[in-house]
Length: 306
Length: 249
Image (cartoon, rainbow over all chains, first blue to last red; front, side, top):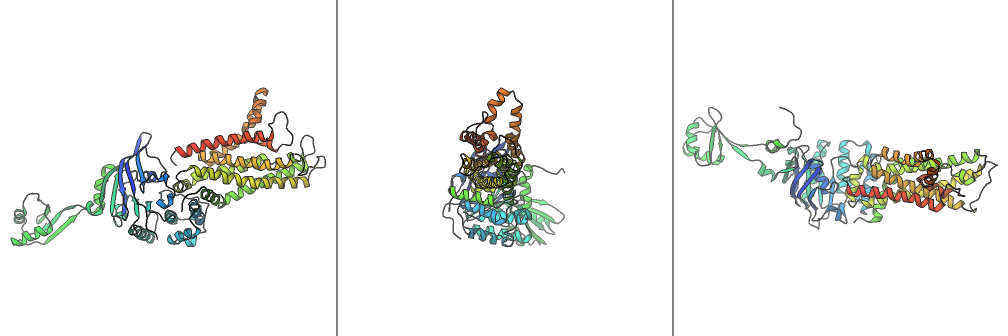
């Protein structure tokens, strides 16, 4: 496979999209860079799909700019080579076979028939290449969409909820495929409303809620340490020992303390120096899922009442 | 590897030819043309109609059928969601409309011209004795037969434009049927002076003029009629192009 020769990147700059009075995307800015997987996260209704549609020019932003590989998408001479895209909704005529569907897209760019067979093979659809798309399961439809996205051997690959409807084997396949594409130096972006799905493969996270940017971060940075759980028969002695600026200690049980602002290593050394026995010394990390929920709590569009 | 006009036309041809409904609708159109031509040729025994008129008497129904073909091609992009893949591949958008129109128009022209010749041949073979037979060499016969193909080709393009404009198969077909069948009927209900003035300019009447061997008072000259129909098609295409270019897909 060829390495992208042009700068491969998605740049979203101060983009706003309004439908009537409703603002679906609100001054959103982020950049998806080459060589890494960018996870585009947010609850349902956060404006992810709309943003992706604006990136490939299906929807026009009310204001702001979207650049694909440094230029507006519509100005490209070979759009399928710039970016391959899988959108959430089905984008194929049910009466056409998988081969005809891909061929009709390939012909626009003079992409040879051999490449169509190649992507069908890659997506594991060779056996059903001559079946009509209307008879496809949700998972097969997703695979066809991904095959279409790869047709032009694009520098950027952007997939909206790619693992929707895929079986576990398919989910694994998508993960391997996307990390492989990023390793080749391509820009990879995928959206999801599930943190667990994205955290496994994404290097970079763009988190949105109600159309606004909530965080532009990495998986490692999002998992903030909550503190260290300490179990000791002498909580009061330990409390005095480790007290200092920036360290807060809360009692969570008769023999239990939660220490924030000091690492497990520092606490352990201090306790040893004073001869205080420790039964347990455990760093407490907020799970990614929790961090994500905290971040998006106020931005959930449709929420179950509690 | 890049987008070329020829590539977009080839892509639209692939879409056109890879749907079963395309072949069924095209087949029905040709069948209507030939079948009605034969039935009319065999059964008509009065005055006022020549063998070309009889052979092409299925053209109104064939027009509806090729118009539906065009409408399904245009609106089908939207009803199936294919438009998203189509426009992601061709983000300039308008080449899609032009290519789709070209493919539908050319395919309808070729098949319906062949259908018109077949209808004339079959009609002549079973022609009622009381109607004088005509040959291909007679005045206006070739023009009428090729004209039938042009007329039906233009109606197919009209269907594509309406389909892309209203983005719904049912809506596009309703407008098409209204233009071709219902509007002429409504016009006939108007006071005679108004009715006579506008009737020749209605799409179906104007287009049919190219298939007539002789021109009565109420009809346009053959090529003038075809040009009027082409005018309707251009207006519909312009509206479709405007909507395609300016609204979200």
